[in-house]
Length: 213
Image 1: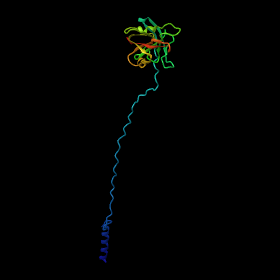
Image 2: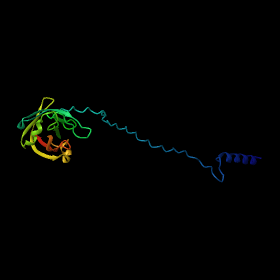
Image 3: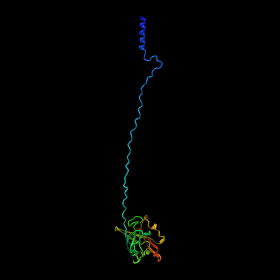
């Protein structure tokens, strides 16, 4: 009886000392918690650069008012004549004052104070019911002669004749004479050559070109 009791106590002690799960064929895996990798911190965003853009008005500035010539003087020929502004005839030709004693200034070209291009003046040699005009003597003007124009602002500009040329009216170099670029010059045109009674016109144009002094 004592032996049986001792065996029971020994079995109880073995059970108590045996770890839980001892003797199992496959041990229960133990899970080890690991820390999840932290995501990299993005760099701070750079500030957006600011660019100051100059702002200009799109409005067009008003063109400077033209200063027309109002008088032409050629002392060598005794010419002292008023000048008025003219435009273009319906035929496309430069308009001229009816009175040969008055010269016309082409108002769509350079004015009396322009620093470039040709100031264009022209006048008739004669006209019905009018005396012969002052520029009838333009053909007598030689290179080196002095002349001047008075401007509407009271100023005056002097010129020296560079050339005097006779052109057939059909061969007049209008693009060259009406130039708006180049050194400032004064161009004076009138009629010349033989008179054609069938057309009522003179055959030629007399053209004087003078350079500013």
